[in-house]
Image (cartoon, rainbow, N blue to C red; front, side, top):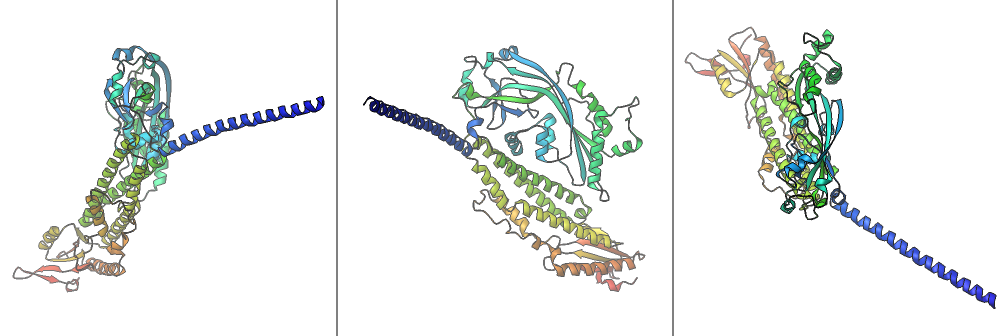
Length: 569
């Protein structure tokens, strides 16, 4: 009986222990599940709000970009703007209780790319600050002006030499940031700032931007490679006693073709404009910072959220995701590429010889610049609103989508430029064919030439000034103050179909008449009584090129038309 009783008690205890274990396990799993769900919920909120939850609680490190930062200064991350005048501490407190330690470092780097991404990496600009720069919210200074330096032409090789150095690190102490040490707490109530500058790395950097023109006969990659090789030599080059470079004669002749532009945090009496100037300035950069670094400037800045000091202070609700910043970057890089192309086209002799082509290019250029400015202004407004919690990131994504579905989408813009470059090439080919011929840029010029000639034969391009519906669509889109919300078909405009030279009939007629005109001019090149002229005049009713009506004064002082076959060689 006793044994049976013991067995029953043992089973009961085992059961109780087992139940207790199960109970405790359930509680433990509940706690784990609760924590998981809490983290998961926060993560979802973090993702939905564009990464706001964790960003708010950390100190931010940003590039100074030539802006006049100082310790204790307030900063508004919603606008990426300094807040001058107002501080949390007195000036004397900020002067007397600063921790400082040396941070001596220098280096150089060769930059062969012109992309916004590579320039930003050179200056260590993080994504959110880059978005503010691209939108125009941030105005850069000193060496950071390198971000605004763009190639003017595609026929231009470019390599940049970057020099960078740091000297010291300064930071606020607990005398400032400790509990109850804020001298002017009413500043928190104003809501004009989100962060305070708590640490700064000082130093200086410089960018030497070297350019060299590339002719049609030269290989762009070869010139770029040669430029890079020569720029790499600068840190090790020496200036000899007579001020000449310690280089071989062939290298000296080579670098004379280089031009130089300087962007730096240094005060120079004269900025370098040549390779030799750049070598001299580069060698003097360490001394220009001062013996004790007194001429250095803020390079990197650490920003502490004001909510760490006062929970009621204004704060950054969310940051902009890298994906959207990259989308904005692509849009503006496309416009930069386009700017080079239409600038190159406007510089051609053909665009000057035929003003109808130049006029369309100028109109296209102006509309692209207006759209880009409007895009940046909208971007700046959305960035501030999103960061302040007024809108979700979707508002910025919508701007990018509207741009892509508008007539200003990158594909259509580039196709139109392809067409203009091809048109210029065709006109150049035909005018090169026409020997012994003067190209007249205007109708008034044509009248002057014909009045001074005994006989004149003129080849007229009649379709150069014809209206292009795509240009009208660009103009109309800019005139609409509120852009349509409904996505538009980006392929609605058949840009190529609008080009006169793509009509086989027109092109064949042009080639036939150009050959006839060229042969006729060549046959009569010794006849000084005849002038051969080429001009572009718009004729909407007659699209084919015209071989015209030379002019011959008659005995009564009147003029009568003469066809080419009326004039004998």
